[in-house]
Length: 165
Image 1 (spheres, one colour):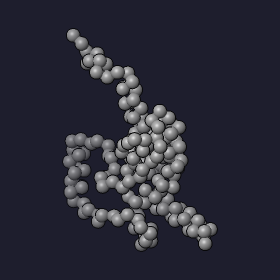
Image 2 (cartoon, rainbow, N blue to C red):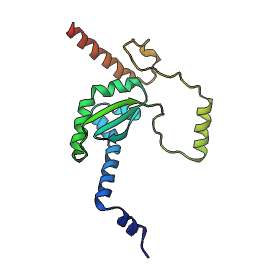
Image 3 (tube, helix red, strand yellow):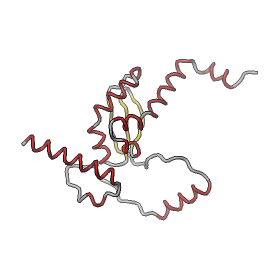
Image 4 (cartoon, rainbow, N blue to C red):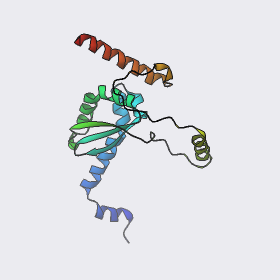
């Protein structure tokens, strides 16, 4: 009688298994690479969605996080190329997603409580992509770390605009 391992070994060659492990490591590296580049909080609001023809597709839940990731896009790309040279990563595409960030799996009573909380919460209106209009103010942003990142980004942009005048 053959074991499951023997059957799987017959179906998948060693190269296929190594390639699958490489993809798994790629997806798992997002938190580590964002942390290395000083934007650890971005990992809670974004994820690697796919690697398609050398382009790493990264999805985030808010336009502000997209702007922050854009400031580090070249460094992120270099880190991915260095860590995964066999994957021929040639670019990073940043896109807004409609889904909530991934959550750890919960079960039983906790899941029922979480579902009840979500059902009683009112849904925020959809966010429009940033097109150059100023934000009403930072006071509406509850996440202090995110608020500080946006302020620093704004200051950096203002300095660059003054230099270009």
